[in-house]
Amino acid sequence: MKILHTSDIHIDSPMTSRLPAAKIRERRRELLLGFDDLARAAVTEGCQAMIIAGDLFDSEEVSKRALDTVLGVIERYPSLIFFYLKGNHEGDALAGHSVLPNNLLIFGEDWTYFCADGLTVAGRSICSDDMFDTLELPSDTKNIVVLHGELRDRSAFPDIIGRSDAAGKNIDYMALGHYHTYSAEPIGEDGLAVYSGTPEGRGFDEVGDMGYVVIDTEGKLTHRFVSFAKRKMQIIKVDITGLTRGQDITELVKTKLSDVNPSDIVRVELVGKYVTGLWKDTEAIRERFEGGFYYLEVKDSSKIEIDPDSYKNDRSLKGEFIRLVTADESLSDEQKERIVACGIYALMGDNIYDR
Image (cartoon, rainbow, N blue to C red; front, side, top):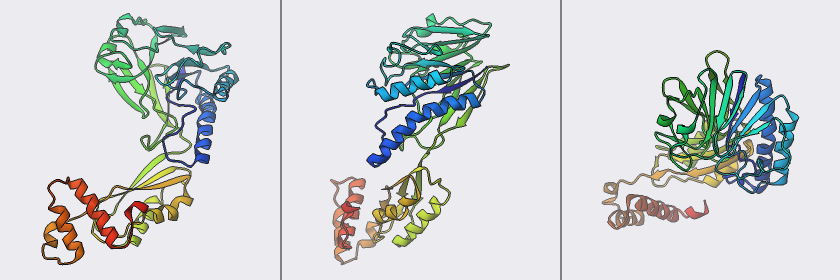
């Protein structure tokens, strides 16, 4: 039997990136329609079931459109069994609906078991420190446990899942939700705890490959991660150390962006240390490249390189200013860097706060 494992879809999310309003609305539609894409992917993969390990929705307030769409997708794929676990973000909008599809199976607050064809799937929506004490899994079936929370050494309430507590409980595969990046680690000698991650990144804290996991219970239970995201969130770091002209920065950014997919959501982040006098125009960089991608922003995390000794005998206004700031012991190094940067740009006739 094959099962698609997903979680943290966060339908109706307000989105955490700084997209324009129109693209936020579009991305929210993409998240919603992506649930149908996941179901189609499950069928294409030859799966007989889909596990949703929490946070299908982003909050307790679920729009009627989102609820109707999700229920419609489940009804449209009667050959798929949908195992649904409520996460920490969502309420009972789905479980509390008056009429539910026959192929939707919902885990309760305590252990709920579904058994068929040599497979046992167990899950619960509430974590507690003693929850594995009451877990009873047969020794003659493949066993999958579905939970939503943070994997640590010992279980606790709320949302803490203990890997040590789960060891020796006949768990072959623990299908987890809560963390938004794929990961897998052992439980005891034979079990495995797997976060599928979110299928679509929503902010720049969710960069890189996002997708789902396909579990195969034939023979020894195995799993594989599959990339799925319609758009990747990417942070492209550009080290400007040693550059002396603004045009050099633009050319380096161009090179770094050459292999980035135009459909992606991109942050260009300037890093490294730059010399005083280097003209950095982040708005010009954004305007130069934003048309080539779904969305692009520029963040300046570079730091000014200051050698106070080199300004000891500099009698210019810049030299006097740098000496004054660097000698002020009430300022942290970070504050000194920021003040010097603002001052240098002001002396150059530029306002750093406009960029």
